[in-house]
Image (cartoon, rainbow, N blue to C red):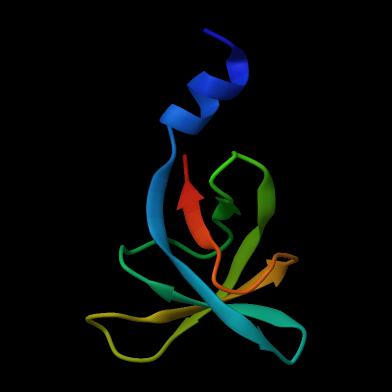
Length: 77
């Protein structure tokens, strides 16, 4: 197996990017993650880091320092 396939298989989906607000990507989280966690796209490419978590406790939002298209699923390793 190639390294890229191994990396992609080790990813765990944590949410979806909804859009951009004040220069940060806004994502709806499905799983709890700590601040400064690196997030990746489906291919394993780094999107950015979690800068802030806000909103309802059961399904919070995250502000992410980084760049990506909206409606992109986000993952952690």
